[in-house]
Length: 276
Image 1 (cartoon, rainbow, N blue to C red):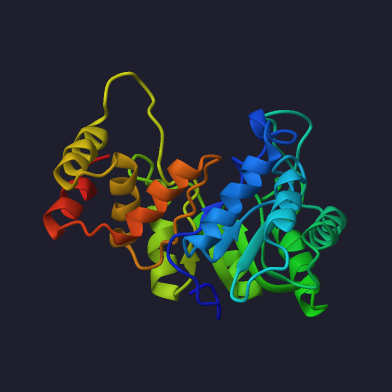
Image 2 (spheres, rainbow, N blue to C red):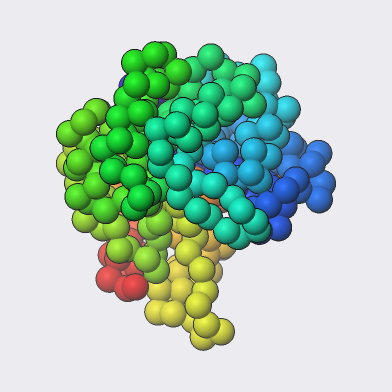
């Protein structure tokens, strides 16, 4: 559950369907739209995007590919980061920017109300309560159904949650990066969804890290990919986790979604839990 919205526990992150550096349109827009359509065909009913992806490109592709939206599809988007160039992300949590960003997202997605609108990142130049306060006003005006936060500390999450019911937190979390474990545990206790971005992690060096070696051994035992093992671990680790793996490839999409059917044994889950 995300707030009062029932969604399947594997969503789709729509950042990678844009151009290199998350900048500009993809080299093959129709292929990107095909990935989105295939995700829905496979039962994905939660799609996460942001105005910063492209910028604006991801939201436009979602509308082009999926409109009219099927019943039950939840589209979550974010505001609060600006994009001066490829791979550049600059926070702007000012109330004026967030209002304009939300209204532009509504226009691009052709929605009257966004089911889940998330503050993309805190802005050190703007009081956090001012950023959250503007989202509260947008919610009161019917432009947002639910509010989420992203890239926050536990203290920031608690601060936001004291101002308004926050239904989701989106922080980096995976087998190799569990720095937000305290946030995850708080979310689980509060029944708040935790959307781990970067759920498949990344390899920092040519040598396999311990968790990667273990994931590969478990994957070989099940005749699946190590990506499926990483996602299955997340699903088994906490009921609060709603992974949103992203890709621009239908083959990778299908492999990721298949992780929902992979059951790791308690021993396998524990083995991965102990490694980082």
